Structure formats: structure tokens, C-alpha cells
Length: 530
Image (tube, rainbow, N blue to C red; front, side, top):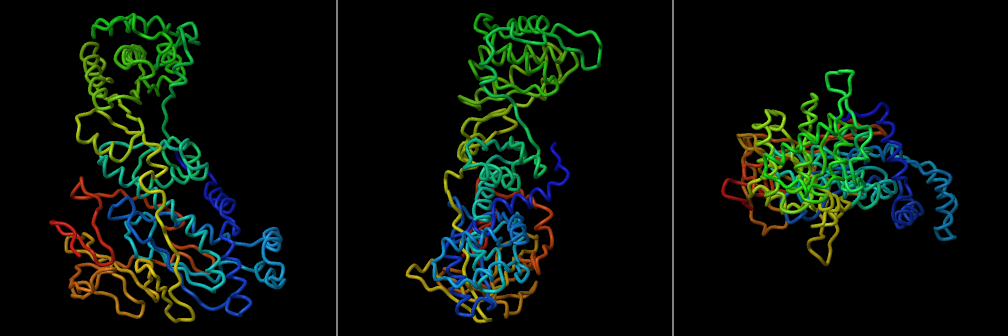
């Protein structure tokens, strides 16, 4: 289990400041800010809302993530002299020089943010964040906030779907760094897939910064780099009890390999000596952490036999091998055979450790593959997921938007040629309504000036994007979804200090989402009702 290193909070803030400076935005944010400033409107109080229009992956929910980085970005927002000089270069030459003096003095001390807690289950068209402040400043924040929320929420939601598909007994290992869209994408994926329900990551930097448990085995390149037992060095290992006399572990393993072959009726001639050498070398280096990949050549004819021989030698010396990884072929069938052999070894050689060996499965795992795993008999304890998790291959973007809803206390509305892009004007309050069993069944949007819903009182509401048919509901409990998380340059609540890790649970494991609502959609035992 990895623990956050000392000073990682400061490292994270510096990381956000370096990765997301004020210039990491679209040019038109600065040109609009200049136009506001020139018209004398830059200080007008304004309110923007951040939301997404459609639930990702053709599902019924998303997890909200990225708030922590948003707050760090706001807290460190400063336009430096170097930034100003570059803006002088790219903005039109007739830009009033006084505008650049205005930019030098900008920060977020006059900005207020109200947000859904990080890790919350959220739904399309429900405003996740409300950003209030001077018009020019909150306009400049748009692109950066969207950049920080879009991918974080998408990959977190993707992880939750993998968790739902896998169930809650199987451990999930995120191992997508090498497939991610650049270093920042890889680190973001490791962080937010953990919030979405993954147990482990292979990303060492993620463990260092965020305290995520780090795990790893070995690559096929390590196995194939060995060709004979002569390459194993050292060739001895002391016992776990600390006996000063080292044991010739190669000779001991050869004895066990012969016994394993006799037990399984295997042909010793098909065993790859280089693979055995690789396993031995690694086991000597890490006798308490022996978990090799066993499919570099042949699982049944070589890898499994070599593992059992080395693992039995470790057991004899008082160590506990961890398990194996399968990375190709029919993972379910192979895992069943591997477990059968483990049980035989346990019974035949009185090696009780073999009853608890871990089997890790990895091989281009997708959400569909994960679902199939649960439908077939298998003995896989841990699943490693990379490409399809971190690249979100089913949907590359969540599509969050940042829309103006109020200026100078007056509602503002976008009316589009595409009705789906029409916004709901005015500042809003968001409530989650729960039934008598404490289960959420509806998210309710109200204008700020409207009275809040009350537990036990029937209310009438209308679905967003629906046919204007009224729905009457009576909540047993009412929860206000958004809270103030940033005010006068300071952060508040769990948003900045604690990343809330949400494990999505459902009564219907084969069904995503947990519950399906879009403002006033709600779920009953018979399905979604609108």
C-alpha cells in the first residue's frame, strides 16, 4: 500500500500551476475579455454554469471529477509579466496598453464557486459547478475549467462502468500509462480511475502524488531476456527465517520441477529453460513478491510448470509466492486450469500457500470483455486494464460546456438552431430527492428564487427536454447537491483536501446506471420512468 509522500499537497498545487497556467486557454477568451474591458463591462457580476448534455457511453450516469484541480487552479491564477508580453505579441496591435495592466492585477479573489462534491454520481444537463464573479474574470476561466473537468469526469465514469461490470469481489488494476494521451493524460487517468473504483495502479508517480496503491509484476521482455540457468545470479537464497547458510535455489527448483512434471504428466523437454531462469532470478531478487507473467512461451507446457517449481522452492524456504499473470489467449479457460494445478500442488505437496495464490488477467480488456468474464467460469482475482480504460475508446469526450446564465442579476439564455443546445436561464439550486429507503430517485433543478422542496411535501415538476408533462413526487428526504467550495481566494470542504472515492453500487448488476435521472427522471423497480 502506497502512502502519500511528505509535501505532496504542495507538489500537486505546483503541478497544477505548471500544467494549467492562465495561458492554457483559447485566444478568444482574451479577446472577449478585452472587449468587455473596453466597454466598461468587465466588472459586471456574472454567473456561468458547467454541465454536460448527454450521459457518456450511452449510459445513464457520470461521476463528477476534476474539482480538486479546478480549485488549485483558481487559487494560483495569476497572469505574469511574461504572460503579458506574449499576449502583447499575439493580440491585435491596436489593443489598448492599459488592458495589459488590468490583466497583471487579475486573480480569483472575487470569484465564488459552488459545486457538486467530487466523486458524486451526476446526470446530463444538471449544472455541476456554478462560477460567479466579475464578467471578464469568469469568462477567462472557461476553457481551463472545462479542460480540468472533461477528461477527469469521463475517465472516472469509465472506471465506474468497469467496476460495475467486474462486480465488487474482483480487484481492478489500472495499467494504462503507456497507452495514455501523453504524460498528463496518464497521470490524470491513474488518479481518477481510482476514484471511479479501481483498486490499484501501475503508475509510480500516481502513487507518489496521490497515495494510490501501486502494483506490478514483470514484462515479457524480462522473461525473454534469459536463455539459460547459467544467467541466474546469485544462485543462492537464505531462508525466510534468516538462517545464515544460503541454499542452492537452482538445485532445489530442479528437484521441484521434476516432481511437478511427474504430478502433471508433463514433458520436461518442452519446458523453456530461459523462462525458468527468469523466474528464478526474479524470485531470488524478490522472494516475497513473486508474481511472474507465465504466457511468454506456453502456459501449459512451460510457464505454469516453471512457476510451480520456483514457488514450491520458495515455500520450502519459508516464503510466500504471490501468484501469476495471464496476458494472452482464453483467460477464463487458462485461469481454471491454473487454479486446478494450484490445488493439486497444494494437496500433493502440502503447500497451503497454493490455495491462496492470485491469478491476474490482462489482455486488451474492455468493458464488454469484463462483462463476459462474469458470464464464464473463471478463477481470475485481479484484472489489469489499460487501453480501453484510459483512452475511453467508446467515447473520447464527455462534452462539458460552460454557459452564461446571469449578468447583473438578470437571467441569460442561449437559444440555438439546435434545441438541444438551448440553455436554461437563471441561477439555479439543485436538489437530490430520496425515497423512504434513502435511495435517490430524482434530481430537481429550481431557480434560486424558488422555495426549496421539503421532505414529505408533494411537488410538481417537469422533465428537461420532455413533453412538458407534469410529474408529481413526494420525497422522504431532500439533499442540496451543491456546496460553496471557493470564496475570496480560499477553498472549502472536501473538494480540495479529500478526493472522495465513489464505488457505484446497483441492485441490478447487469444494468447501468445506478439510477437514471435527467433532472426529473427517476427509477423504479420496473425501470426508468419519465
